[in-house]
Image (tube, rainbow, N blue to C red):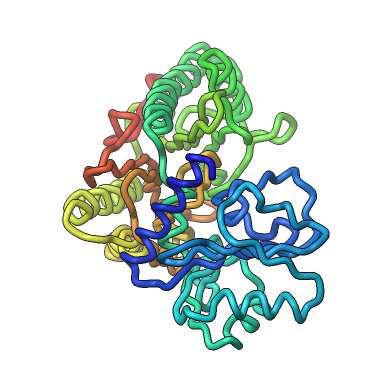
Length: 399
């Protein structure tokens, strides 16, 4: 057994005991379960046409169940190998493997409450349950392997967050100077300015950053295109959303959003909505800073804090997305989301994971406001905010 998987196995068995499960059944068919592929270290470019299963008991030796024509798929892993070819032999192998188990976990989410954690098809769940097995979700345990950051990744997050914070100032300065000299500047121009800074700093993103003005800000995923981009003019409200990571293996994303105004005197309608968004953001952060060091907190709880604040200000119907998402090697990572709106995310916010807090209010046809920062939970449960200073006021441009 390789040393890396030995650590995975030891950790998995400790967690199974802590959460009081008899075992973890990892099932995969044609790469449908990316959690299983990642945890078991099965290469995604490896040809896989048959089902395989790997059972990690809370105690004892694992079992691997593989098809006869792909029997070597899990040979890099420890455990007894059971080979099947007929469907009857597959059922028999699973049944005998789970004979002493009653409550196990799989990549399943009750009522599909957390689709990110739901990877196993209903028919397979029916089959396992037919053996008298109680299946629970692996969602809390799997993120210890699929969402936690190591020391290098934590440093990546902080460094990328610093770059993004500096680039925000550069982008607003670019707009300001353009308007001061009556030079035409579009949302697309700002996007390109940001991308140029990415290149200078050797960071990148798989998708282009966002700059939007006025009514375009009310579209949370608005994207400025070269031939379909709005000019930025004096008196416009401006939203800049940018995310990036280092060009190194296994680096992780930082992701922030800032608001600006092309002028010095901010209209009351913009300020009122901005204050509501900032209040919701800061309420969620304060709640996490208070509660996470003391106890287990779910993503749904934190979403409720932010959403309730915006509701109290009369803008609830205009907050149309979750409060935040997990951060990882993808900008939307595999860990807990700050969400009790789009999904009911009851996963715990665990140590060594990162996520965003980004409430927003979107008044269709008028304007939108969002404020986004990143949070990292340290090993000792400290709530850390990379990319300081965070936004406290709308950026005003002297134009």
